[in-house]
Length: 71
Image: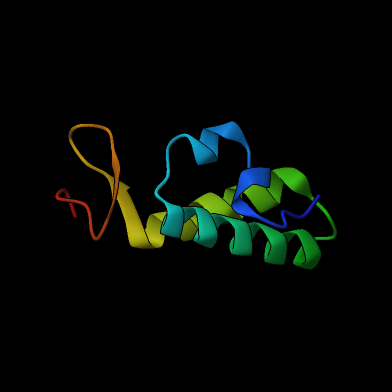
């Protein structure tokens, strides 16, 4: 089930990620959905991996853009 807009994303994504990260998630999920023959679990893993390339959780637990302080 590809996502057409941010409001279609799962609550766990909408409630935690900033808008730009949600866009990354949505585009990565939709691409993986097609690429991996509608394997939803795999598409979610790919989408989170795409977000983690540009965002990380800070010490307060918020998703912020940039590399992790631990990296």
